[in-house]
Length: 450
Image (tube, rainbow, N blue to C red; front, side):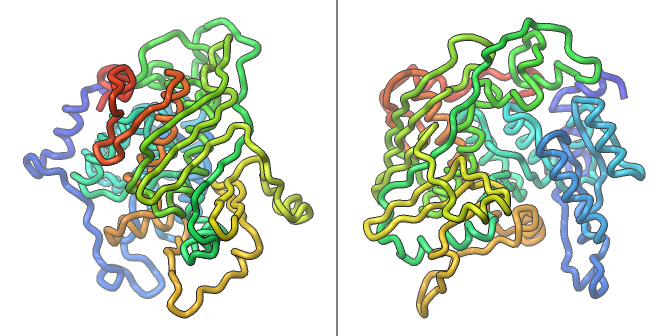
Protein backbone atom coordinates (compact mmCIF):
# COMPACT_ATOMS: atom_id res chain seq x y z
CA UNK A 1 0.00 0.00 0.00
CA UNK A 2 1.55 3.32 -1.03
CA UNK A 3 1.76 6.43 1.12
CA UNK A 4 -0.97 8.28 -0.78
CA UNK A 5 -3.40 5.44 -0.16
CA UNK A 6 -2.47 5.33 3.52
CA UNK A 7 -3.02 9.06 3.93
CA UNK A 8 -6.46 9.26 2.35
CA UNK A 9 -8.98 11.41 4.13
CA UNK A 10 -11.14 10.36 7.05
CA UNK A 11 -14.22 10.83 4.88
CA UNK A 12 -12.86 8.29 2.39
CA UNK A 13 -12.20 5.53 4.88
CA UNK A 14 -15.54 6.07 6.60
CA UNK A 15 -17.31 5.57 3.25
CA UNK A 16 -15.59 2.18 3.08
CA UNK A 17 -16.99 0.92 6.37
CA UNK A 18 -20.46 2.32 5.83
CA UNK A 19 -20.99 1.27 2.23
CA UNK A 20 -23.05 -1.80 3.07
CA UNK A 21 -25.45 0.09 5.32
CA UNK A 22 -26.08 3.43 3.66
CA UNK A 23 -25.38 6.10 6.26
CA UNK A 24 -25.43 3.69 9.20
CA UNK A 25 -22.27 2.40 10.81
CA UNK A 26 -22.27 -1.39 11.07
CA UNK A 27 -21.57 -2.53 14.64
CA UNK A 28 -20.28 -6.01 15.46
CA UNK A 29 -22.96 -8.35 16.78
CA UNK A 30 -22.25 -10.91 19.48
CA UNK A 31 -24.42 -13.95 20.09
CA UNK A 32 -24.57 -15.88 23.35
CA UNK A 33 -21.99 -18.58 23.93
CA UNK A 34 -24.76 -21.19 24.19
CA UNK A 35 -25.67 -20.47 20.54
CA UNK A 36 -22.23 -20.56 18.94
CA UNK A 37 -19.83 -22.23 21.33
CA UNK A 38 -19.46 -25.75 22.58
CA UNK A 39 -19.01 -26.26 26.33
CA UNK A 40 -15.53 -25.13 27.33
CA UNK A 41 -14.76 -23.80 23.85
CA UNK A 42 -15.74 -20.32 22.59
CA UNK A 43 -17.73 -20.21 19.38
CA UNK A 44 -16.33 -18.33 16.40
CA UNK A 45 -18.42 -15.24 17.10
CA UNK A 46 -17.29 -15.20 20.74
CA UNK A 47 -13.68 -14.79 19.66
CA UNK A 48 -13.38 -11.04 19.35
CA UNK A 49 -11.05 -9.98 16.54
CA UNK A 50 -8.66 -7.31 17.80
CA UNK A 51 -5.98 -5.11 16.25
CA UNK A 52 -3.22 -3.20 17.99
CA UNK A 53 -2.38 0.43 17.20
CA UNK A 54 0.94 1.31 18.83
CA UNK A 55 3.00 -1.71 19.90
CA UNK A 56 5.92 -0.17 21.81
CA UNK A 57 6.03 0.44 25.57
CA UNK A 58 2.63 -0.33 27.06
CA UNK A 59 1.52 -1.49 23.62
CA UNK A 60 3.88 -4.45 23.82
CA UNK A 61 2.38 -5.40 27.17
CA UNK A 62 -1.15 -5.29 25.75
CA UNK A 63 -0.03 -7.45 22.84
CA UNK A 64 1.45 -10.00 25.23
CA UNK A 65 -1.84 -10.18 27.09
CA UNK A 66 -3.77 -10.75 23.86
CA UNK A 67 -1.32 -13.43 22.73
CA UNK A 68 -2.00 -15.32 25.95
CA UNK A 69 -5.71 -14.87 25.42
CA UNK A 70 -5.39 -16.09 21.83
CA UNK A 71 -3.60 -19.22 23.04
CA UNK A 72 -6.79 -20.07 24.94
CA UNK A 73 -8.89 -19.59 21.80
CA UNK A 74 -10.56 -16.42 23.12
CA UNK A 75 -9.46 -13.78 20.58
CA UNK A 76 -8.13 -13.38 17.08
CA UNK A 77 -5.33 -10.88 16.40
CA UNK A 78 -5.77 -9.46 12.91
CA UNK A 79 -3.28 -6.60 12.68
CA UNK A 80 -0.50 -4.68 14.38
CA UNK A 81 0.19 -1.05 13.56
CA UNK A 82 3.07 1.26 14.44
CA UNK A 83 4.87 4.21 12.86
CA UNK A 84 8.20 2.61 13.86
CA UNK A 85 9.03 -0.19 11.42
CA UNK A 86 11.26 -2.01 13.93
CA UNK A 87 8.50 -2.13 16.53
CA UNK A 88 5.98 -3.08 13.86
CA UNK A 89 8.12 -5.95 12.57
CA UNK A 90 8.84 -7.25 16.07
CA UNK A 91 5.14 -7.26 16.93
CA UNK A 92 4.21 -9.00 13.68
CA UNK A 93 6.84 -11.65 14.35
CA UNK A 94 5.43 -12.20 17.85
CA UNK A 95 1.92 -12.70 16.50
CA UNK A 96 2.95 -14.79 13.50
CA UNK A 97 0.61 -16.29 10.98
CA UNK A 98 -1.04 -13.98 8.49
CA UNK A 99 -1.23 -10.95 10.80
CA UNK A 100 -1.24 -7.66 8.88
CA UNK A 101 1.53 -5.20 9.76
CA UNK A 102 0.35 -1.62 9.13
CA UNK A 103 2.03 1.77 9.11
CA UNK A 104 -1.19 3.82 9.17
CA UNK A 105 -3.94 3.20 11.74
CA UNK A 106 -6.63 3.97 9.17
CA UNK A 107 -5.71 0.77 7.35
CA UNK A 108 -6.80 -1.09 10.49
CA UNK A 109 -10.05 0.84 10.73
CA UNK A 110 -10.89 -0.02 7.13
CA UNK A 111 -11.05 -3.72 8.01
CA UNK A 112 -14.62 -4.90 8.52
CA UNK A 113 -13.45 -8.06 10.31
CA UNK A 114 -11.81 -6.10 13.15
CA UNK A 115 -14.19 -5.78 16.10
CA UNK A 116 -11.96 -3.91 18.54
CA UNK A 117 -8.71 -1.98 18.71
CA UNK A 118 -6.13 -1.49 21.45
CA UNK A 119 -4.61 2.00 21.17
CA UNK A 120 -1.26 2.56 22.89
CA UNK A 121 0.08 5.51 20.94
CA UNK A 122 1.44 8.77 22.47
CA UNK A 123 -1.12 10.89 24.29
CA UNK A 124 -1.69 13.39 21.46
CA UNK A 125 -3.11 10.57 19.30
CA UNK A 126 -5.59 9.11 21.82
CA UNK A 127 -8.61 11.27 21.08
CA UNK A 128 -8.34 11.30 17.28
CA UNK A 129 -7.81 7.56 16.98
CA UNK A 130 -10.55 6.76 19.49
CA UNK A 131 -13.10 8.94 17.71
CA UNK A 132 -12.17 7.53 14.30
CA UNK A 133 -12.35 3.97 15.67
CA UNK A 134 -15.80 4.67 17.12
CA UNK A 135 -16.98 6.09 13.80
CA UNK A 136 -15.89 2.87 12.10
CA UNK A 137 -17.70 0.71 14.64
CA UNK A 138 -14.71 -0.58 16.62
CA UNK A 139 -14.68 -1.08 20.38
CA UNK A 140 -11.71 0.69 21.97
CA UNK A 141 -9.18 0.08 24.71
CA UNK A 142 -7.06 3.25 24.79
CA UNK A 143 -4.16 4.13 27.02
CA UNK A 144 -4.45 6.93 29.53
CA UNK A 145 -4.77 9.86 29.66
CA UNK A 146 -7.94 9.88 27.60
CA UNK A 147 -7.28 13.28 26.05
CA UNK A 148 -5.00 16.31 25.99
CA UNK A 149 -7.71 19.00 25.77
CA UNK A 150 -11.27 19.49 26.96
CA UNK A 151 -12.50 19.67 23.35
CA UNK A 152 -10.98 16.24 22.66
CA UNK A 153 -12.59 14.74 25.72
CA UNK A 154 -16.05 15.98 24.78
CA UNK A 155 -15.63 14.55 21.27
CA UNK A 156 -14.62 11.15 22.67
CA UNK A 157 -17.65 10.97 24.95
CA UNK A 158 -19.98 11.97 22.13
CA UNK A 159 -18.50 9.39 19.75
CA UNK A 160 -18.70 6.58 22.29
CA UNK A 161 -22.34 7.30 23.04
CA UNK A 162 -23.38 7.77 19.42
CA UNK A 163 -21.81 4.60 18.14
CA UNK A 164 -22.56 2.51 21.24
CA UNK A 165 -19.11 1.01 21.61
CA UNK A 166 -17.33 -0.24 24.70
CA UNK A 167 -14.42 2.05 25.61
CA UNK A 168 -11.93 1.23 28.34
CA UNK A 169 -9.31 3.79 29.39
CA UNK A 170 -6.02 2.21 30.46
CA UNK A 171 -6.05 3.51 34.05
CA UNK A 172 -5.95 -0.06 35.26
CA UNK A 173 -5.63 0.75 38.95
CA UNK A 174 -9.39 0.44 39.43
CA UNK A 175 -9.20 -3.22 38.44
CA UNK A 176 -6.52 -4.22 40.98
CA UNK A 177 -7.56 -6.48 43.90
CA UNK A 178 -6.35 -4.13 46.65
CA UNK A 179 -8.07 -1.18 44.97
CA UNK A 180 -11.30 -3.14 45.33
CA UNK A 181 -10.58 -3.62 49.05
CA UNK A 182 -9.79 0.08 49.57
CA UNK A 183 -12.96 1.05 47.70
CA UNK A 184 -15.02 -1.36 49.80
CA UNK A 185 -13.55 0.03 53.02
CA UNK A 186 -14.25 3.65 52.10
CA UNK A 187 -17.74 2.94 50.68
CA UNK A 188 -18.78 1.32 53.95
CA UNK A 189 -17.98 4.47 55.91
CA UNK A 190 -14.97 3.16 57.78
CA UNK A 191 -13.27 6.55 57.44
CA UNK A 192 -16.40 8.55 58.14
CA UNK A 193 -16.95 11.34 55.62
CA UNK A 194 -13.86 11.74 53.46
CA UNK A 195 -13.06 15.43 53.24
CA UNK A 196 -9.63 15.37 51.62
CA UNK A 197 -7.60 13.16 49.29
CA UNK A 198 -3.92 14.03 48.97
CA UNK A 199 -1.92 12.46 46.13
CA UNK A 200 1.85 12.46 46.22
CA UNK A 201 4.31 11.86 43.40
CA UNK A 202 7.93 12.58 42.62
CA UNK A 203 8.91 15.47 40.31
CA UNK A 204 9.08 15.40 36.50
CA UNK A 205 12.53 15.35 34.88
CA UNK A 206 14.07 18.33 33.10
CA UNK A 207 15.96 18.40 29.81
CA UNK A 208 19.29 19.47 31.24
CA UNK A 209 21.30 18.33 28.21
CA UNK A 210 19.52 19.58 25.08
CA UNK A 211 20.54 18.17 21.71
CA UNK A 212 20.08 19.75 18.26
CA UNK A 213 17.33 18.75 15.83
CA UNK A 214 18.28 16.04 13.36
CA UNK A 215 16.90 13.77 10.69
CA UNK A 216 14.54 11.12 12.11
CA UNK A 217 15.84 7.55 12.25
CA UNK A 218 15.03 5.59 9.08
CA UNK A 219 12.59 3.28 10.85
CA UNK A 220 10.37 6.16 12.05
CA UNK A 221 7.65 7.87 10.00
CA UNK A 222 7.98 11.25 11.68
CA UNK A 223 4.97 12.81 9.97
CA UNK A 224 2.68 10.04 11.22
CA UNK A 225 4.22 10.17 14.70
CA UNK A 226 3.31 13.87 14.91
CA UNK A 227 -0.17 13.26 13.51
CA UNK A 228 -2.49 16.00 14.82
CA UNK A 229 0.38 18.11 16.22
CA UNK A 230 1.88 21.01 14.23
CA UNK A 231 4.77 19.88 12.06
CA UNK A 232 8.23 20.45 13.53
CA UNK A 233 11.71 19.04 12.96
CA UNK A 234 12.59 15.75 14.61
CA UNK A 235 14.57 15.73 17.85
CA UNK A 236 15.44 12.56 19.71
CA UNK A 237 14.26 14.15 22.97
CA UNK A 238 10.67 14.02 21.64
CA UNK A 239 10.25 10.26 21.50
CA UNK A 240 9.72 7.51 22.13
CA UNK A 241 8.87 7.52 25.86
CA UNK A 242 10.06 11.08 26.44
CA UNK A 243 6.96 12.54 24.77
CA UNK A 244 5.53 12.55 28.31
CA UNK A 245 7.59 15.57 29.28
CA UNK A 246 6.16 17.87 26.61
CA UNK A 247 2.94 19.72 27.36
CA UNK A 248 1.36 19.18 23.94
CA UNK A 249 2.08 15.46 23.69
CA UNK A 250 2.36 14.30 27.30
CA UNK A 251 1.72 16.90 30.00
CA UNK A 252 4.15 15.70 32.66
CA UNK A 253 3.66 13.49 35.70
CA UNK A 254 0.19 14.85 36.46
CA UNK A 255 -1.18 13.68 33.11
CA UNK A 256 0.82 10.44 33.17
CA UNK A 257 0.59 9.04 36.70
CA UNK A 258 -2.11 11.49 37.73
CA UNK A 259 -4.37 9.66 35.30
CA UNK A 260 -3.90 6.62 37.55
CA UNK A 261 -3.86 8.02 41.08
CA UNK A 262 -6.63 10.57 40.56
CA UNK A 263 -8.70 8.04 38.63
CA UNK A 264 -8.85 5.94 41.78
CA UNK A 265 -9.70 9.01 43.84
CA UNK A 266 -12.70 9.86 41.66
CA UNK A 267 -13.83 6.24 41.70
CA UNK A 268 -13.57 5.75 45.46
CA UNK A 269 -15.27 9.11 46.04
CA UNK A 270 -18.12 8.26 43.63
CA UNK A 271 -17.19 11.40 41.69
CA UNK A 272 -16.77 10.16 38.11
CA UNK A 273 -19.69 12.27 36.91
CA UNK A 274 -18.87 15.40 38.88
CA UNK A 275 -15.90 17.74 38.79
CA UNK A 276 -14.16 20.46 40.77
CA UNK A 277 -15.50 24.01 40.97
CA UNK A 278 -12.07 25.60 41.44
CA UNK A 279 -8.56 24.59 40.42
CA UNK A 280 -5.46 26.35 41.69
CA UNK A 281 -1.92 25.27 40.80
CA UNK A 282 1.57 26.41 41.72
CA UNK A 283 4.92 24.99 40.72
CA UNK A 284 8.06 25.31 38.63
CA UNK A 285 8.56 24.81 34.90
CA UNK A 286 11.81 24.20 32.97
CA UNK A 287 13.84 27.14 31.72
CA UNK A 288 15.86 25.31 29.05
CA UNK A 289 15.65 22.35 26.75
CA UNK A 290 12.66 20.88 24.90
CA UNK A 291 10.72 19.49 27.83
CA UNK A 292 8.26 22.02 29.19
CA UNK A 293 6.03 20.15 31.65
CA UNK A 294 6.05 21.13 35.32
CA UNK A 295 8.99 19.88 37.36
CA UNK A 296 7.32 20.56 40.72
CA UNK A 297 3.61 21.11 41.06
CA UNK A 298 0.87 21.47 43.65
CA UNK A 299 -2.76 21.57 42.53
CA UNK A 300 -5.79 22.01 44.78
CA UNK A 301 -9.20 20.97 43.43
CA UNK A 302 -12.31 21.95 45.40
CA UNK A 303 -15.47 19.88 44.90
CA UNK A 304 -19.00 20.76 46.03
CA UNK A 305 -22.11 18.75 46.95
CA UNK A 306 -20.51 16.89 48.61
CA UNK A 307 -17.67 19.14 49.68
CA UNK A 308 -14.20 17.64 49.52
CA UNK A 309 -10.69 18.57 48.39
CA UNK A 310 -8.37 16.73 46.04
CA UNK A 311 -4.68 17.64 46.09
CA UNK A 312 -2.01 16.67 43.58
CA UNK A 313 1.39 17.22 45.22
CA UNK A 314 4.55 16.74 43.12
CA UNK A 315 6.67 15.98 44.96
CA UNK A 316 4.52 15.45 48.00
CA UNK A 317 5.12 13.88 51.37
CA UNK A 318 5.94 10.29 50.54
CA UNK A 319 4.45 7.67 52.84
CA UNK A 320 6.61 4.54 52.75
CA UNK A 321 4.82 1.22 52.45
CA UNK A 322 4.31 -0.17 55.96
CA UNK A 323 6.01 -3.55 55.39
CA UNK A 324 9.54 -3.08 54.05
CA UNK A 325 10.17 -6.81 53.57
CA UNK A 326 6.96 -7.23 51.58
CA UNK A 327 7.75 -4.10 49.60
CA UNK A 328 11.07 -5.54 48.50
CA UNK A 329 9.73 -9.03 47.81
CA UNK A 330 6.83 -7.76 45.69
CA UNK A 331 8.73 -4.90 44.08
CA UNK A 332 6.22 -2.37 45.41
CA UNK A 333 6.92 1.14 44.09
CA UNK A 334 5.86 3.36 46.97
CA UNK A 335 7.05 6.60 45.35
CA UNK A 336 3.48 7.70 44.66
CA UNK A 337 0.00 7.15 46.03
CA UNK A 338 -2.78 8.89 47.95
CA UNK A 339 -4.08 9.43 51.48
CA UNK A 340 -7.86 9.40 52.02
CA UNK A 341 -8.61 11.54 55.09
CA UNK A 342 -12.02 11.09 56.73
CA UNK A 343 -13.45 12.68 59.84
CA UNK A 344 -12.97 9.38 61.71
CA UNK A 345 -9.87 7.79 60.22
CA UNK A 346 -7.57 7.82 57.19
CA UNK A 347 -6.44 5.22 54.65
CA UNK A 348 -3.31 5.09 52.52
CA UNK A 349 -3.40 3.64 49.00
CA UNK A 350 0.01 3.15 47.44
CA UNK A 351 0.86 3.38 43.72
CA UNK A 352 -2.35 3.30 41.67
CA UNK A 353 -1.77 1.74 38.24
CA UNK A 354 -0.80 -1.89 37.56
CA UNK A 355 0.12 -2.02 41.24
CA UNK A 356 -2.27 -0.94 43.99
CA UNK A 357 -1.65 -1.65 47.68
CA UNK A 358 -3.48 -0.53 50.78
CA UNK A 359 -3.40 -1.00 54.54
CA UNK A 360 -4.06 -4.25 56.41
CA UNK A 361 -7.24 -2.89 57.99
CA UNK A 362 -8.81 -2.55 54.55
CA UNK A 363 -7.51 -5.90 53.35
CA UNK A 364 -9.05 -7.69 56.34
CA UNK A 365 -12.36 -5.79 56.24
CA UNK A 366 -15.53 -7.87 55.82
CA UNK A 367 -18.75 -6.25 54.65
CA UNK A 368 -21.29 -6.40 57.51
CA UNK A 369 -24.90 -7.42 57.07
CA UNK A 370 -26.64 -4.64 55.19
CA UNK A 371 -23.30 -3.17 54.16
CA UNK A 372 -22.31 -1.74 50.79
CA UNK A 373 -20.94 -3.92 48.00
CA UNK A 374 -18.85 -2.41 45.21
CA UNK A 375 -17.99 -3.77 41.79
CA UNK A 376 -15.07 -6.21 41.65
CA UNK A 377 -13.34 -6.12 38.30
CA UNK A 378 -12.30 -9.42 36.70
CA UNK A 379 -9.22 -7.62 35.40
CA UNK A 380 -8.94 -4.48 33.28
CA UNK A 381 -8.85 -6.17 29.87
CA UNK A 382 -11.46 -8.72 30.91
CA UNK A 383 -13.75 -5.96 32.12
CA UNK A 384 -13.45 -4.41 28.65
CA UNK A 385 -14.37 -7.69 26.97
CA UNK A 386 -17.32 -8.00 29.32
CA UNK A 387 -18.43 -4.56 28.16
CA UNK A 388 -18.02 -5.55 24.50
CA UNK A 389 -20.13 -8.68 24.88
CA UNK A 390 -22.83 -7.41 27.24
CA UNK A 391 -23.04 -3.66 26.69
CA UNK A 392 -22.21 -3.08 30.36
CA UNK A 393 -20.29 0.11 31.20
CA UNK A 394 -16.59 -0.58 31.67
CA UNK A 395 -14.98 0.22 35.02
CA UNK A 396 -12.90 3.02 33.44
CA UNK A 397 -15.42 4.05 30.81
CA UNK A 398 -14.98 7.05 28.53
CA UNK A 399 -16.92 9.44 30.80
CA UNK A 400 -14.75 8.46 33.77
CA UNK A 401 -11.56 8.63 31.73
CA UNK A 402 -12.39 12.08 30.42
CA UNK A 403 -13.34 13.33 33.91
CA UNK A 404 -9.91 12.25 35.16
CA UNK A 405 -8.11 13.74 32.16
CA UNK A 406 -9.90 17.06 32.69
CA UNK A 407 -8.35 17.26 36.15
CA UNK A 408 -4.88 16.99 34.62
CA UNK A 409 -5.64 19.42 31.78
CA UNK A 410 -7.08 22.05 34.13
CA UNK A 411 -4.24 21.64 36.61
CA UNK A 412 -1.65 22.28 33.90
CA UNK A 413 -3.66 25.22 32.56
CA UNK A 414 -3.90 26.87 35.98
CA UNK A 415 -0.15 26.53 36.43
CA UNK A 416 0.67 27.97 33.01
CA UNK A 417 -1.69 30.93 33.48
CA UNK A 418 -0.64 31.49 37.08
CA UNK A 419 -4.14 31.84 38.49
CA UNK A 420 -7.11 30.02 39.97
CA UNK A 421 -9.67 28.70 37.51
CA UNK A 422 -13.40 28.50 38.16
CA UNK A 423 -15.01 25.50 36.49
CA UNK A 424 -18.61 24.59 35.76
CA UNK A 425 -18.58 20.76 36.02
CA UNK A 426 -22.03 20.44 34.45
CA UNK A 427 -21.42 22.55 31.35
CA UNK A 428 -17.72 21.65 31.41
CA UNK A 429 -16.67 25.24 30.88
CA UNK A 430 -14.34 27.71 32.56
CA UNK A 431 -16.27 30.56 34.15
CA UNK A 432 -15.35 34.23 33.72
CA UNK A 433 -11.95 33.77 32.04
CA UNK A 434 -12.13 34.07 28.23
CA UNK A 435 -8.38 33.63 27.80
CA UNK A 436 -8.37 30.36 29.72
CA UNK A 437 -11.49 29.20 27.86
CA UNK A 438 -9.73 29.62 24.52
CA UNK A 439 -7.05 27.22 25.72
CA UNK A 440 -9.51 24.36 26.23
CA UNK A 441 -9.00 23.40 22.58
CA UNK A 442 -6.24 23.60 19.99
CA UNK A 443 -5.91 23.25 16.22
CA UNK A 444 -5.21 19.81 14.78
CA UNK A 445 -3.30 19.10 11.59
CA UNK A 446 -5.34 17.76 8.66
CA UNK A 447 -6.11 14.92 8.02
CA UNK A 448 -5.30 13.80 11.58
CA UNK A 449 -8.16 15.69 13.16
CA UNK A 450 -11.47 15.14 14.94
